[in-house]
Image 1: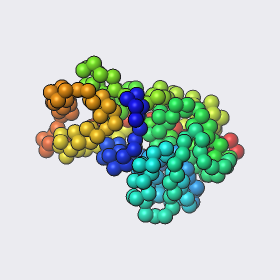
Image 2: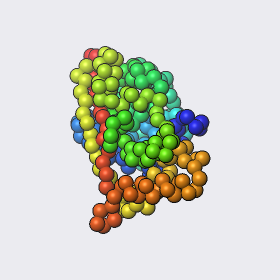
Image 3: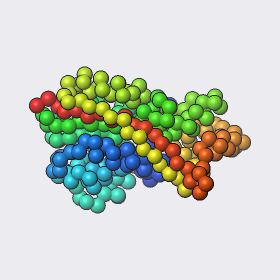
Length: 263
């Protein structure tokens, strides 16, 4: 991994850091979509399978294929899956290893801003989904206040003169950008929704343990002295106030979009 590139290769670490957040948003996302059972799904950029498992649990699909570039993530996804409905393949979001009209529904969960050419990734989902099928995504509202679980950390890093890593297509996280992307791809019945979720940590140490393993955190603090890292931790402790029980609860916001391929 280069210093300017965000890659997720550790499925267990991703689960601790972001998988829990993804499931919180994913539950509301699926409730909003309300898809029928028995569909054949493709989960593009499935990572460690956090959202794939939600599809299995909530949507009674006939089959799911999860596609991701990281074998480390896919290994974790395979190890957590026991229903026998999902298969996980290594692949690129802009060159999916399937023929035209292979699926009834496609999704990207916290992925599309990592695709260097979002329109190309969306076009691939359109290609592999049947006419009239559903194509949906959700993504952190990355460029707005409180829109990203690591927003507070990013602000503290910037105050220290450190620019945190950002995905290559951060602008697509904006709601109007998602809507335009789906419309420009020729999708119909395009709809969007804002989803806000909260997560509670047992205490600051529990919170910090999830922050320390974040890819952006590791890259941003690699060259910091121990004293500067300790100062960063102290400033974060002051920023994320605990309640009377010592718990830390805060919210993050995602933007969601859905549409149908032309019948």
